[in-house]
Amino acid sequence: MTLPTSPTIRSVSVPGARLHYEIRGAGPVLLVIGSPMASADFAPLADALADDRTVVTYDPRGYADSPVDEPDAQCSVEQRADDVIAILDDLAADSADLFGSSGGAVTGLALVAQFLMKFENWPLWLQLLVGVPHALLAGILLWAWRPLRGRGFYWAVGLFIYLCLFYMVFMRK
Image (tube, rainbow, N blue to C red):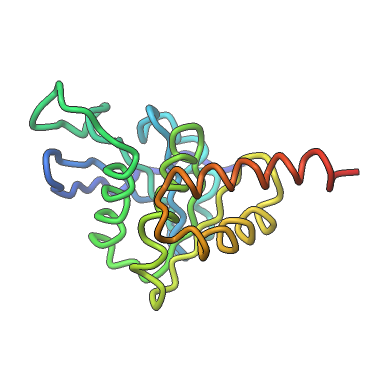
């Protein structure tokens, strides 16, 4: 049984907000994110995973302890991806795995769509666990990204959904 740990609390300023994030454990970085879920919602999972990893959870802008400058301003998925990159930069992480739940999985797709080209020579490998085996999913995302690089986020998400449905309907036995 894993006992709860006291996280290291940090924050980073980004345009329009100040992001609260928590760090547990030591080892390779694993980001555990959701939206609209905050760090506190993931505390039991983060504690359980922190035995051999540095588990990072955060409060998305406008939730819990991440205040925004303009409360009525809209927040796009691309902006949330920028926020996750700001946290990785603040950690000086040269690699990270990502577990995205709900809106966190959508943020993970935006990370692939926005930042794979920017970080081609930086080993940021994202493993999104959203119902299909993560190795296949990572392969699909990386394969789908190349031809869609210039078409944008929604093209990549559309192809991703199509390929996942194809896998679930035709490839599973």
